[in-house]
Image 1 (tube, helix red, strand yellow):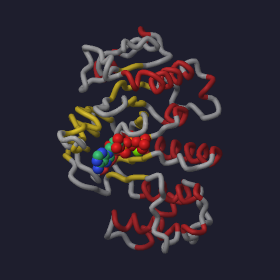
Image 2 (cartoon, helix red, strand yellow; image 1 turned 90 degrees about the horizontal axis):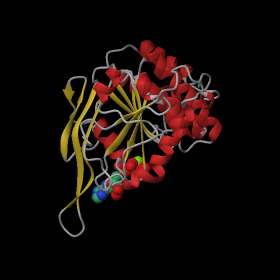
Image 3 (cartoon, helix red, strand yellow; image 1 turned 90 degrees about the vertical axis):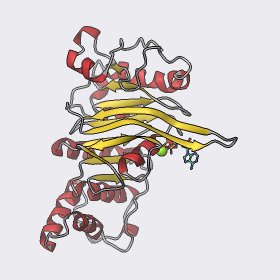
Image 4 (cartoon, helix red, strand yellow; image 1 turned 135 degrees about the horizontal axis):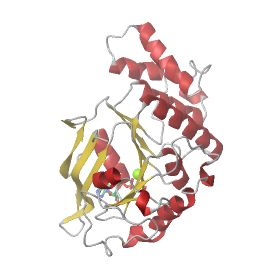
Length: 305
Ligand SMILES: Nc1ncnc2c1ncn2[C@@H]1O[C@H](COP(=O)(O)OP(=O)(O)OP(=O)(O)O)[C@@H](O)[C@H]1O
Ligand SMILES: [Mg+2]
């Protein structure tokens, strides 16, 4: 898979209280292929939102660059849509108005009917049909988040950036929205970079799960390949033989290795090619191309750090 997004050696540093600087994270490298769904997992404060904001163009790295579709990013762009945890809807506009506004910003020359048709398509996709004329104040939290999702997808961005988009929702609504987002992103081959704290959410949605070690000086400790079949469902994924190895691998990282990563860092750790792991799949079945692309493969379940 070619690199559609290329994060090249980015760092974020802030002045330290006693002088000098503290690096939230250092020397982060990552390639994301077109149509790939990547989730990032790591403890609070390791810099996930900062990375997402840099991708969005809302923040600047202290070092390094980000290339999207062959161009270095500088500032926000309608190519990169962000779904925040809060909904950030325009309160005086209806559901249709909020989405149509975004569509118009993207395609200024479009006639009203075409804008409305595009907005309606995405209103239908997130199951808000019938609520087009409601204002945000008349919507539940889940419905507001659906508007945010429809608005982001209706501008057909090159990348969809999501920062814990479902964390404020009840479990039932969260599950339904996960299904909707997964369905739409698969159907439209949407490239996604998403932050979550929910391991099952990552396993359900992501093709690849990045594990970030704790800061300061956070790193991409591992790129975990999701070996579950692409047609997995929320209801059946736990029955797949690779599910528990994958889940346990991520849990073990969060519980212990995320903290000890810096101290125990393998001598051959290369920030440009963080270890690729594929829990639940025996070593011989690892595709050579995958290993070559992502870096040295480690035996799943037996990490060397
Ligand atoms: N202006 C600032 N000055 C100093 N440190 C800052 C500043 N802004 C952010 N930080 C630090 O950057 C680090 C990363 O913040 P970020 O919001 O990216 O973390 P996160 O991984 O998204 O955490 P969470 O899971 O809680 O959302 C934090 O430790 C925070 O204290
Ligand atoms: Mg955050």
